[in-house]
Length: 235
Image 1 (spheres, rainbow, N blue to C red):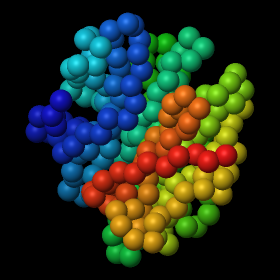
Image 2: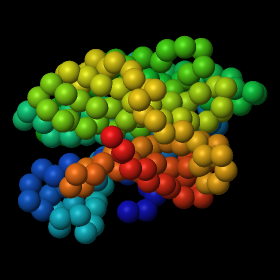
Image 3: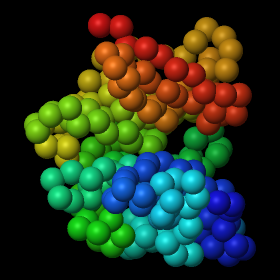
Image 4: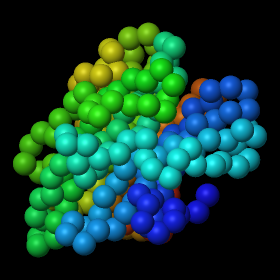
């Protein structure tokens, strides 16, 4: 997949976020599309691409986003992370209506929202607030990554946009229902390095379990311009 045709919601970039297997050879890929604007810096909405060959190739479901702008989620409906659970598609994403000034530069303001869908294609105009921004130093959350460890045991790995750093840091939260989260950011145990590709920012954590090991992949400075890293959980 390349960027969308001129004038579409993903004509200036797209970022694959999560993949859900719906049938043996059918995969739904949710992605964020970036569109440059004139009176605001950009807009981000969420698209869907479908693979019928087990992930070898993907085609857009439509040229318009499946999470398009609405009155309550006007500028941002991005970072879509979906899972298939309890007979439903469950979706966590970031959404917002505001910009804030950060050292003379307009920056987005958005929080974490939650939705459910029967088909993974059609979604409501407004999601449920799942985790709000707290504190004067925060102005947004980056793409969520959710792990369900048991019937009443969810983990959330996410990125926090902080004013003081003008960059991302990683956060961690837990939930019994996947909707209402208790933040435990201090338990993430991963911060920027003294120097190198991740010395200024870390973001977009992706956590997977392989055998008896747990790995966290993450992007470094400037949204991963110089690469990504991996950290291993040490109990």
